[in-house]
Length: 353
Image (cartoon, rainbow, N blue to C red; front, side, top):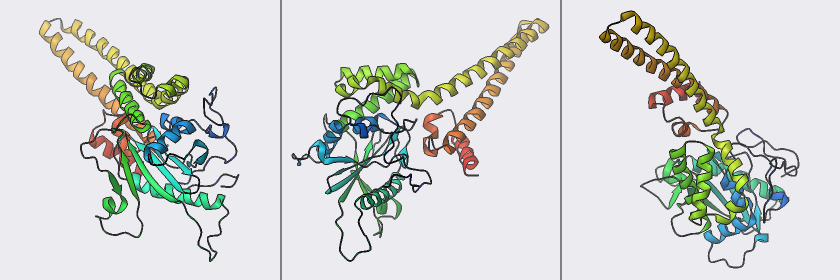
């Protein structure tokens, strides 16, 4: 890839090939090279990215995928991840190459979506394009060029009853018919031992459980780290990178926290105003029965008004986040569980319109 920024397939720009911006206050950490410190920490960055930027853990990942290869070292692996091109919610893609033999593309997702195959198709095309550009290969020459093989993996951290070992473009989008363009990926569920993939999946599931218990809060992050240490899950990584992990994960719920705080304030103000009206009505009516009826009617109206306003605010916030590509439409329900299917359909029309 050239030094200048290149426009990617989604219309954005990849990071400068030789200009990387360090995360404020971040320490590269043991085993991390200067060139491995990725430029941009946004809400899309994740523990998945940070973990496998470290060559030590990247080698562990490769060894999990290829236990038969006992000769590959950290120096044989090259990070070829396409930055800021393809993302899946709180997870980024990972791409690396073992010399010129094999290209391994890995993407993590917490919600099941077959659209990941289409994204990986773009991802694979961009990766090969970058590879040949870096090698200065003339694809119009008569001599057949050498091309590394490709392996595609999806690390799934959610819960699912049907768990296929492989998913493919032809199988999912063309009814299993032969297709001139094919993408086939192996799905890794992280339940086959204590390897680095299994530990990452466990970490993700612990975090999900803690968010359900503590909400999107610092406590959820700290409890996730504590529990994983107790269970010997990513222990060394969490010990050396705890502050970075907290910072990365905090970005993921800052927007959600602000949004919830705003709705709580609106609800409180509406409730206080309504209670004042109720008290005035009760004093005027005097009779106990009238007081009961007025209070019940007012409270019902309060709930309806608060819910309507909250839903409207949530839809506006969700629309902004989808348009800004901070979340995808199929992730709206996860971040805004109060929205009904009808609300989400209305939101889809708003975004597409």
